[in-house]
Image (cartoon, rainbow, N blue to C red; front, side, top):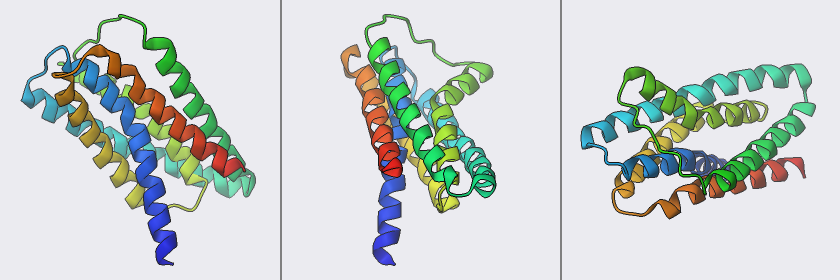
Length: 186
C-alpha cells in the first residue's frame, strides 16, 4: 500500500515537472527581457492557479469519459499523453530557432492569456489522468505548486542566462509525457 502511494506521488510529481517546463521555458524567455519582482510573484501565482483549474476540469471530463468508455479509456488516455508529449517535443524543436519576441503580459488579458497558454497542456493531461484512478486533490495541488515554482525559477533565471536554454525545457517535458503515454499503452 505504501509503495503504491509513493509510486503514485512520484508519477504525479514527475508529470507536474514535465508540464511545468512550459511555464519555466516561457518564464525564462520573459525574464531575459526584464521583469520586476512584483510581476514575477503575480505571474507565478496566476500560472499556478491555472495549473490547478485546467487539470481539474480535465480530470472531471476524464472521469466522465472513463465511465462511458470503461477500459478503452485507459488506452485513449495513453494515446492523449503520447500525442501531447510528441506535440510539445515537436513544438520546442521547431520554435527554438525562431527569434519572435516574447511579449510581457502586463494587462489582465495578457496575463490570463499567458497563463492559459502555459496551462493548456495541463488540461489534456487532466483528461488523461481522469480516465485512470488518481487522487484529484494531490494531482491538482501538485500541478499548481510545481507550475508556480517553475515559473518563478524561469523568470528569475531568465535574468541571468542566454536564450539558448529556452527551448530545451519544453522538449524535456514533451519527452517525459511521451514516455508516460507509452507506459500506459504497453
